[in-house]
Image 1 (spheres, rainbow, N blue to C red):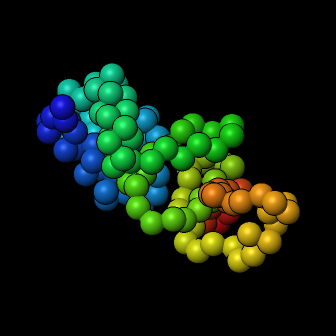
Image 2: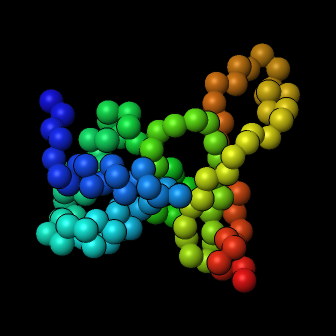
Length: 122
């Protein structure tokens, strides 16, 4: 049974307002700015519940902390190697089906770009 709590509403709101996927540490820091008593266990539990309900999607990039974003349209990600932030990238490279080996059926894909974000490259 899903409970609507002040903490759940806060965390969902933080992710809805974010312009990029956020890590647990970022959610905790931002959440504590609005709700000082917010605990780390509460953030982990709430994020897990939101992922299980399909409201959030985990963005897993090798070598980086898992970040979370609202589940919405298909898109890809850019990972900044300096600040470790992850950003959404709109669009999809054409011709991915042509890369699939003969006899295989492509069901999904994930494209991750790596480099420096605008802030880090300035």
